[in-house]
Image (tube, rainbow, N blue to C red; front, side, top):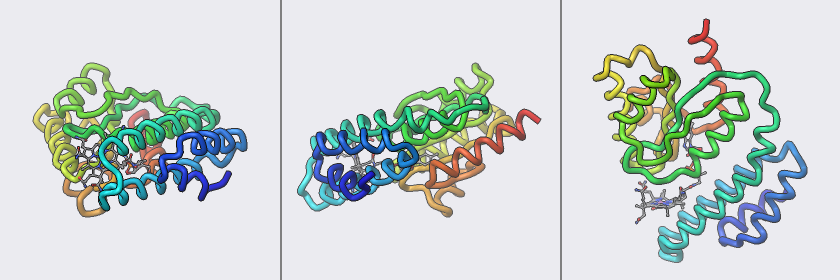
Length: 212
Ligand code: B12
């Protein structure tokens, strides 16, 4: 697996090279997570070039499309190891945020970790999350957001559980680009992290506690 080649291909929007390298990474097993990280770092370059006026929104859309294809190639390798059933959880990108590549990576890793993931998609209203959790009896909620204003939607989602009298019934984890120790705490969630891998560990621990 050639980390720099993947990162550069992502940054330069070189679809053919990116997908060819991802197929190699998928075939060589064990390199899947590093390949995803290379894509993510390439995406940072895309964001920088957008900031510098070199790329436009159309380029961001294309970047999103090829990254999704890249994640799809590597997904079966991530999912291959799943054994034990860890239970159900809800994942979504919060209200007014349409970014879903990070969410899809977290989802793929949760599925690989044995979770049955109910994905509500993007731009999901707090009430929808609450109603779904209630209807389906799901007690673990994973919220993703990439825009700075997603932090507010995350906090609103936590509050919606409070208003519904269900806050004590669910565990909520938030993550994504604007989430750090301070901002994560302010959302009122039970946990926060940047790391999809840590999310799997935290959710597995919650799942064991809930079932105990
Ligand atoms: C691709 C992209 C788009 C695509 C999204 C396609 C898609 N299907 O997602 C499109 C074109 C739709 C888009 C639209 C917009 N975008 Co945009 N976009 C990006 C870009 C280039 C990459 C984002 C990305 O996918 N990164 C790769 C993934 C893997 O990273 P990630 O999402 O951060 O996820 C990782 C972690 O954060 C974490 N994670 C994510 N979720 C979760 C959840 C949990 C629980 C955990 C633990 C971890 C976790 O794990 C992931 C893997 O490590 C970024 C720039 C950048 N460098 O990030 C701008 C960026 C996010 N966009 C930005 C903006 C401003 C916009 C628009 C407003 C542009 C416009 N003028 O129209 C719209 C907003 C639309 C909306 N309402 O959401 C800004 C956000 C500024 C801000 N801080 O609020 C950025 C930073 C660009 C910039 N520098 O200005 N965008």
